[in-house]
Length: 304
Image (cartoon, rainbow, N blue to C red; front, side, top):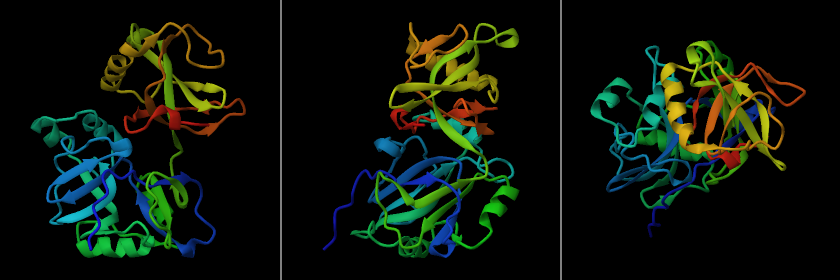
């Protein structure tokens, strides 16, 4: 007897860390620098993101793969001229809910499938990862291979300028909506999500606009200041940020701790991603570089 297709499904998430010591118990996948998306195929096609975000019209390039009845987990990426995922290119598309054909042509996306959660009336969530991947590979829909845990995939991704790897226990089930230690993301670049709590006015060429963004993360005491980021912005990104932050302006700082300088404050509703070199002893991000807004993330999840 077939089981009804679950809809929508929250994706299972990985914890950050290092490669596991018992590496033979894991498979390694390339970590794709994009946005998580689940494809639901049941006579038609629906694409959802985290928290039930509707992506079907946003990414019309995602088709049915010739599969009639399935739920597929994967990543939306935008590739650069060298075939590497470019988060900057993806930003051109990720805010467009119904993109014009010209934008689809200029900034095409690719869907990278890497898990199979439901097939032909049968939920697969309790199957081990290795078995789900075997069924996914049999569909022949372009899923990249995974590699033995003892392989040197992390070094290879570093050499190719890729973000890193995800180590997944071969016997792990799929637990929707959980961040499980069964999956470990190992990055070549250190990145993290931050909440925007305000901005410092710019000088010179940036006079009258954003000079740097004030970053925070949530702790038990509230939004905690972790530094400001003033590099990594394109002119288009600054214009986009100015437009997004203008309706969020408030009179008082949202941070629990004092923040230097004369600033403009905003409600902490937006999440962004930065790359950085390390944390300081004062709990500040050292040498942060802006990578972009993350509309697929919610502020309450951005914790220390």
